[in-house]
Length: 198
Image (cartoon, rainbow, N blue to C red; front, side, top):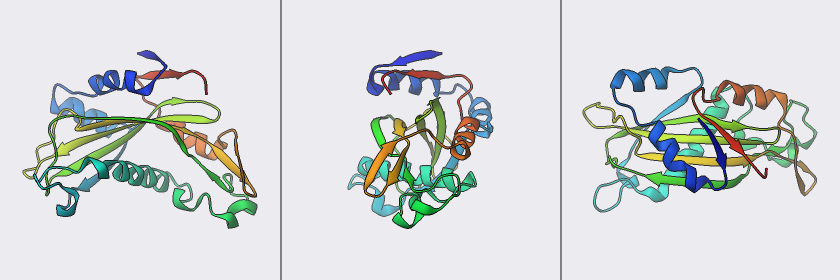
């Protein structure tokens, strides 16, 4: 499936539809794919609203944490330290850099997680260029009895652009090979989104 991205919101429904599974085995195969990174998280009591359902305002934080776990598990230096000023003179294949989000889209669907449930958060790379990556995020509910939903409770797409620092200035630049190699391993096999204007 090739999609020309004009607006992430317009295409997110298609991504969600492709990641709704018709059988547990199909979902298990997807989650076991070497191109998919999975981070499982409990929904704590302080992360739900008064109606005892998932607080959507905290999902963005969860997705950031999943991205951080993805970077750590890839063998790269922790993303949280990439932009520290003391890294400007470090020659580790990344240096002082960041991957700011330039566009984001998210949608929420049933089943809605409740306190005590778990979510399998998933990251995959939907598109990759010299200086950008489009990350796809999904969250599959695992209820308190251990049953996993076949459809995501959240689907999100993040367009991130690689930036390096020179003093106080930031410049969009080519993603270093060390990072590019990690991202290439996560390219979705059945979806290829083409980004225009980046």
